[in-house]
Image (cartoon, rainbow, N blue to C red; front, top):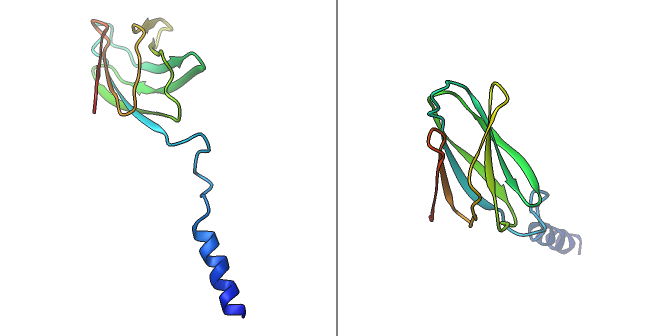
Length: 118
């Protein structure tokens, strides 16, 4: 009787959710490529802003292009990127809409923002 009970416990355990599962659904992964080609050589800290808040994506050094990852379980209707320079000044992207699997490219020198589908 004991071996059958142990098998049932093991079977139930393998079907359970892990502690890393998100109750709100699968995460949408968005790649954000930042080209820091500003004439004023400065690192930038990049944030993404949505109606529900903002989050720091990362830092991009002067003259570098870096791809940052952004994940969330619910994609909202509008977003904006903000790049804060070392001196405290900021560059803001135009507002845009995201979709799951998007590749967002932002070239800072001419404020060119583009979105690509996977």
